[in-house]
Length: 138
Image (tube, rainbow, N blue to C red; front, side):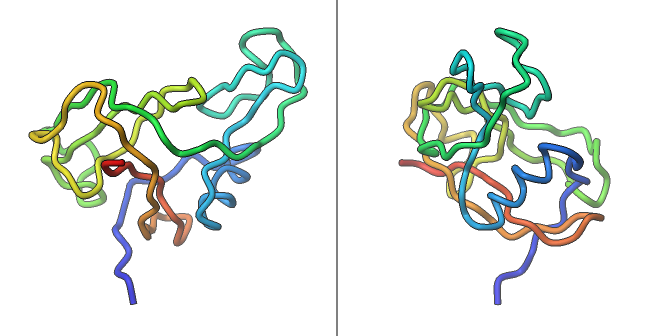
């Protein structure tokens, strides 16, 4: 049995719930505008590029490259995310930048442009159990 990590509360609600449902199936799916093809992230109700409301979740590759990284030493989330912890920014192949955590490597081992791929880890928050997308070396 895999232990779940406790995390700060996720954003929930329309669109966000759909994102988390896909993550719980081990799928990284992001919205794509059906009119202009733009891939917004995080979840939006209206396309930032063309103003369309025709947004649909579609699978993405889960592959990308490391764009930035930092370590937080301030305990912003208390017990839910004790400091220090590493955070990364991944530029997905499909375009959006995705803020996440490294998995299987530390920020001390990070290099700009490093190829990464999505993985999912078991987590829980005040809304229950879920799979959190994190990124490991590709």
